[in-house]
Image (cartoon, rainbow, N blue to C red; front, side, top):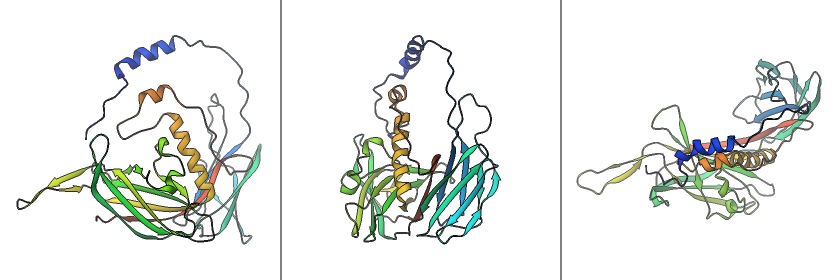
Length: 318
């Protein structure tokens, strides 16, 4: 696969780093102690049991573990029943039960010397895929590489505000246990354009039903495949075939998941990990963006407790 010309001369990088380093002075100062806050993270999905990770905010000079395995993690359902999750070690806590769709759950975490924190979220119901497929090839990108097109259709439930995430991946032809996420270009879709994230190079499409509430939705998005082959039989014109299955995942996500995923996308971009399929942009690694706050629905602490339900399938070729 062709690679575009690099505008940044990598040979100049060591010299530039040395120049920047010569302008740095070391100073000694007493940094303020970090806040006494717990960090709680959990993804609620009907496909898995309840799992929660508990850690704490630490300073850069604190060599002890951030993970807390002696906390008390309680799970409260909307019906009023309470379950205490068991510690699995390394800050992980788990239940033998699985979340149910359309049910609200509240996680409460207590630990010695830390304020108690809690978070509530609901697992949305699955929104079925009505039909989906891909076509290849359907065009070329700016570097004359062949593109394919993914099409997916589903019916949005009426009278409720819904949020979605669509991702596409291809099983790696290098290793059977690995998969390659494919970046989707859906700039022709009004619901996606309204989210205004294309310049952040998101790894999946996360959007609301604001522009199609209660109606059918169709997404057409182009993608650059991880590999394809050409074959010809009986003197016929060559046929181009993608070398691995194209898999699509449609997630119906909670508002908390939607808001966290949005902040996470911007955070990754500002870290300088924008990857356009041709490796990291070294100029961006040198000149990172301003820090952005990560979304959290954990009252009194940090982290996120968010739910989703999903449907996945291998796309047929049309």
